[in-house]
Image 1 (cartoon, rainbow, N blue to C red):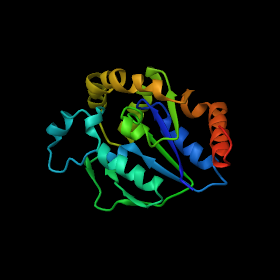
Image 2 (cartoon, rainbow, N blue to C red):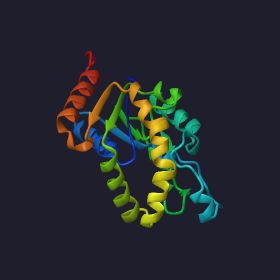
Image 3 (cartoon, helix red, strand yellow):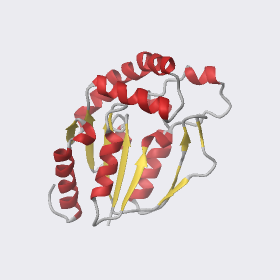
Image 4 (cartoon, rainbow, N blue to C red):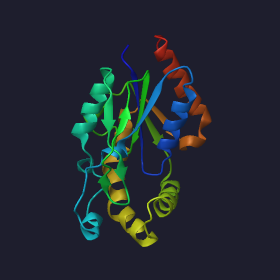
Length: 208
């Protein structure tokens, strides 16, 4: 049986990864694989720190969408993939990819997941996590300082020059393609339960 592919989009810091992982954890009666769109950032080996700071990480061109589309197609056909592993400190892919085997359900999250039509065509259920801008910014600051080792001034500069404008240009408009919009992200347990119920019905062959 063709796997069910669930796409979860939303702005940076919206809580989409939390939603994606809770969905994956909630599907106890099905095999579930998790993919992050961030793994498909284009490799930037050899670029200096100054050059890396000039890049727009929130534009669709920052991602290897051809590879992501090919990998989703392979998983849909029941073929395992070697998903890239992206190092956000060095801004390059690891030499060792992560093997992802075909599963009953594939859950993928990403800020621009609903922007590209080729990617949307692979998604059976499209979700958008809608969280207010202040909350998203605070979460992004905490994550980038704690996990990615970036100074506050660099985080704020990037947010104002690329993150916020790209959110308004690409991320927010892509919400119209969603089948389900989840306000407040991972805190919205009722919406997540409804999503899990819809996925379960689809797996059982009944209308969602």
